[in-house]
Length: 270
Image 1 (tube, rainbow, N blue to C red):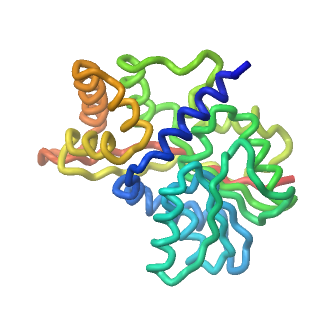
Image 2: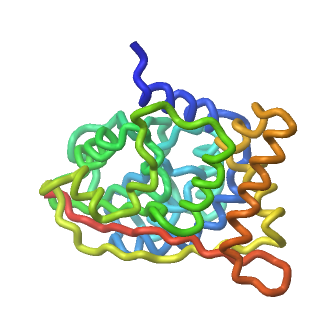
């Protein structure tokens, strides 16, 4: 019998395997990745794993520091872009198509395990957490960045939830990763948290409408959902997303400047 976790996993896999160029959105998180690698104290020669790496923002930030980097993701399209970006910068990364819930590496393979707005979307959160810890050596570092339970991204999820079909029962909100308490539930005494900071990532765009249009074009799960809706549903989805961005908009010149709160955790594997 197929579990709700498997249903969502295959749905997400299908979305990210589509020929969709995610890079125009990924570039909005470049600074977040740089700060994450700094917080995790990535050093020359560290064996680093970037889980759910997308087009490689965090993997590249680690490679620039001289780390030996492996990037994994559902999407071969995203990983191919990451390799091209690395080549353009004159650094090297290895890539492997993989599920965060079942990483294809031996126990303790890495000194540092990172994920930026990635592993939080694995539907089986406990299994994903267990895998992150399994592949990190004892004494190694785990650094994760996740959207908070409150703020723009949570509001966006709530707004879309009002117009889109709900996830299967039993699949928790990915935003639970945005609380320190959830780390205690997932990892218990298997990690020691060394820093936990709530930070803000700003999004700049010509307008809320332009940002939503970019997400509907370049964010694979949104693109898949949008394409499956009838015109009325498409209008409702776009309007709900635009409303969330407008509520967060701090710009006074007609453009978009909206901040999204995220939790950055760095912990030591025990």
